[in-house]
Length: 350
Ligand SMILES: Nc1ncnc2c1ncn2[C@@H]1O[C@H](COP(=O)(O)OP(=O)(O)OP(=O)(O)O)[C@@H](O)[C@H]1O
Image 1 (cartoon, rainbow, N blue to C red):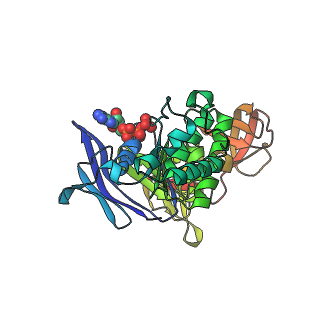
Image 2 (cartoon, rainbow, N blue to C red):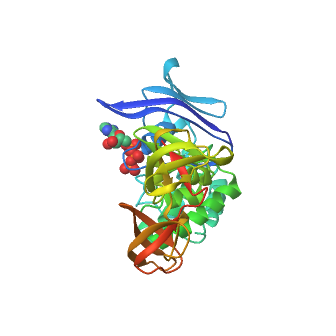
Image 3 (cartoon, protein in one colour):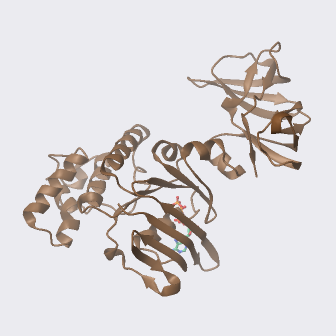
């Protein structure tokens, strides 16, 4: 499958800039997720690749073919892009059976009838809906309908697959199953895929690479581990799970490390290669902080709230006037305690 190259995509609606210089590459067989809050420009980016939205500036190319190059006046119509698309709003046709829905892209291309029937049966098997071809969409569950939409998207082998929140209508349990199942299908068919979601768990679980978007820009581009562990920006850290933000000054520490100094932690917090300066912010995940009774090593703290959440406890802890959230698997009584931020737990942001 070809790779997708996007350069300097810009789009405004009136005075509102929606895409502010988006650029990225999706490599062959790669699963890339655009992740960000509502309104950050994810869908507009996908629509521009699909050909349903024209950017004001920029270049979009798939393999050797240039879909869009505004400066050269190129903007290929959607129907000539040959993409597999599953959008939230791209529903099934209610008056057609499942087989007719899935076969539609093939009849559009005037495929041989017998070959088309065989292909429909094949993709319905792939999405585990063999034998459901004669049903109508209203006779299927939400999850089954999503799978039919996916079967339709891959019936005529697409150059790339574009998915916009395809599981949004499913409940939490089904969503998780659909996620695993789609990822397996994508890997086994080797589909170059761009996936849009605002759900960080979905992005972490499925992606080879995540692009975190905010205000029409890409703030972070990396593997799920990189984006989660080294968010780089406060917004990214916060969007991908809970974080404590601590502000202080950064000075040189032992062995080339940096140390964040602040009154609550008189011995400092080791932050690897943070740039030195009078004011800096570090992010610490609640599960990376050590919390124990008052005899443990660390700084004096006071547990003010403990909530049992099944696989861990969520603590609110006060340290020298700061409120810090800690997640730990063990129980610690409310009252005096000690916390410790081990080297490597805190990362520099912004
Ligand atoms: N046709 C349009 N006319 C005017 N504004 C638009 C249009 N389409 C999108 N917008 C605006 O552009 C911004 C980005 O929209 P977009 O749908 O790309 O965001 P998104 O990140 O996909 O959000 P969501 O997760 O809610 O779908 C939003 O502020 C939206 O209101």
